[in-house]
Image 1 (cartoon, one colour):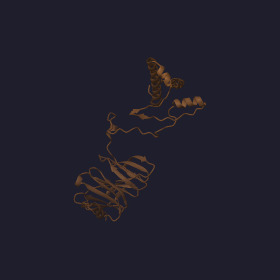
Image 2 (image 1 turned 180 degrees about the vertical axis):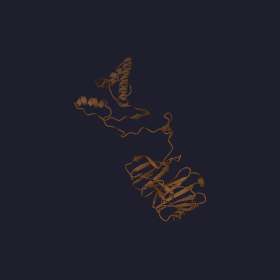
Image 3 (image 1 turned 90 degrees about the vertical axis):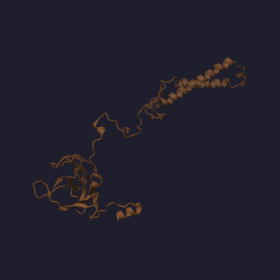
Image 4 (image 1 turned 45 degrees about the horizontal axis):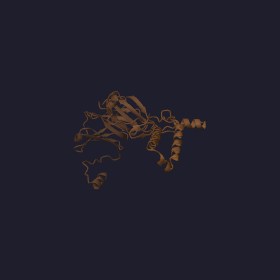
Length: 306
């Protein structure tokens, strides 16, 4: 039914439709090799089937005693690993003398049983949800609903490490080590900013507003400040202070008073007409200097530049 739905909605014909399982399929694994690859499917019907990608033929059917939840093969396609609902991982050797298409798996937990067709990795207490084999085929990783990931040595069937999690493990995969972790000189292609827990931490910097307000009000309350980025320039901690500027607050107030006095003294048009050109030039220079000082003071208060 899924193949028909895909064909009707997208107009795509599936290459193969495999419907040999009698219960839901729980996992799929596809090996490398393009159309010459193999596909392994695990199901709750206690079987694991291996298919040929090119012809779609069923190559082998493995029958287990328990429902299966996950499946994978090593890169050489020599061994098949199946994770069961009872927490056991089964290892099946694909190249054996028995060449029948259907094989009933007999378990050997000790490895001494000559009639056994598989070995097991026992350690999980709940269903195994995912499996992955290393590129050299020596290590196996299994994740389970028991909130653990186990790393196994395939040859000895021993668990070399157990990683605990806070919830059920749904997927795990072995990947090659990224070059950035092997060499400190390798630079990442996509630089990522360092992660921070908070974008803005209150009372991180103590600026002019906090110090002045504490001195005026007699309290220790600090004003919160935020770093601002203007025109591509990253501002550091905004340490606003009048000590690095040309004017203090008292001098600024005196400048404002002087400007008001100049305006009141030159408010009469008759007085302006009676002034000589030299006096007008001097007053113009004074006003320009006052405006320049006020502008410098304001910009240094905002941008905190010295």
